[in-house]
Amino acid sequence: MITDKNLIIASNSGAITTSVAVGDVLDLAAIREVGEGKTLYAFIHVNTAFAGGGTVTFQVKSSANDTIAAADTTIGSSPTFTSDGTNLPDNKVVAIKLNPQLGLTGDQYLGLWVATTGTVSTGTIGACVVLDIQDGLKYYPTNIVIDD
Image (cartoon, rainbow, N blue to C red; front, side):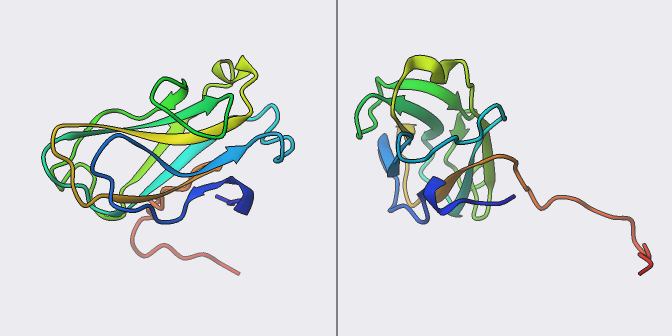
C-alpha cells in the first residue's frame, strides 16, 4: 500500500465521541486524476480503541462544499461496529471500497464522516484514500526458506 500525502484525511483524529466529520476534507479539483479508472479504498486505522458500548460506522462522503455533513452523499460505508473495546481495538484496520458510480455527482470534496449512536468514548483514528489495501495478515508456513 502506497499512501499519497495529498490523500491523507487524518493522521490522528481527536477522540471521537459523537457523530462528526473527521480530519481534512480532500479537494478533488486540486488532486488530479485520483485513481482514474481504478478501485479506490478508504483505509482507516484505529489508533486508540473505541469504548462505551455505542455503535460506530465510518462513511466516506462527497460534498459540493468543503465541509462534510451527515446529509452529504455516502460513496462508501463500513459495517456498524459496537464500541465495546473488542470490535474496534487498537490497530484495527477498516477498509471501505468507494463506489465510483456514486461519485459521479459532480461533488468537488471528499471526506470522512463517523456516525455514532449511544455512548462512544476514547476512539481515535487515522485515515487515507489508497489504490490498494495492506492488512499485514499474510502468513507463511513455518520453516519456509527463500533462496537468494
